[in-house]
Image (tube, rainbow, N blue to C red; front, side, top):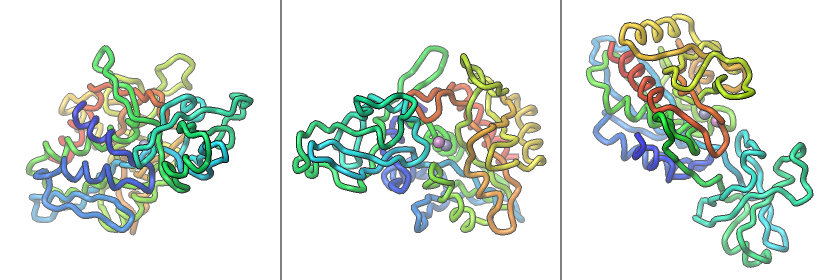
Length: 329
Ligand code: CO
Ligand code: ZN
């Protein structure tokens, strides 16, 4: 899992620029599915044929994009201004190393006179080490993508921290589930989607291509188990989080029940999730075509959209097992 995550982390995939990570995913899925397709937006859909004589269409989705920045302006002193792609937490992003898509590095810092309360794109710049516009323009172009540098550290208790676990941990769960899955009765379409962080756009076209009967996303969800956290029943180490609702979707009760039953029967650690803010690809898959029975298996994650997102590897394994058990029954 660590090795797979490191490979996924090494391919930057700011929304709209996911091709590098899709290439990694495609290589990792070799031999684990019957067919792989990509669409015009860049979604990658891996297909695994069902053994049943009348297979249903089950769609899985994890988003392969990550939050980041676009270069908007380079000033006469060579400082680079940026625009956010997705929900940037500016406090968490301050004073971090930035990687541009062409390999250029810089550091993201707030203007010297910016107050924390007014942090936002207009108060931040990237210092790439150049002292004038001309030399900076040789390294960085308007529209170039960038992100906080990836990192992955192993902590005590089987926990890991770094970025972007949102949602490369979900991609890793689905890759591993596809590798383990054998003899699935239903047709499985496993989508690695683009542009989730800017409004679940990839999942929209991918689900129209698949037209699923049943759909299940895998994404990170928040937790309520840290100091000062809002009350929330999900905790790190509590197992796979079966989503009931978030701000974008009310999951199909029959699927919530079915996933819960499978987890109980197989002895897979699980918990139930209601996330007050935030959404996921489930919302698009549920509404595609005539609609699908939709749900989500979430990976409990602390400090989402920071550089130190944290997961418990036992929860990650529980998510893999729940996907495989559900799809095998
Ligand atoms: Co996110
Ligand atoms: Zn996500």
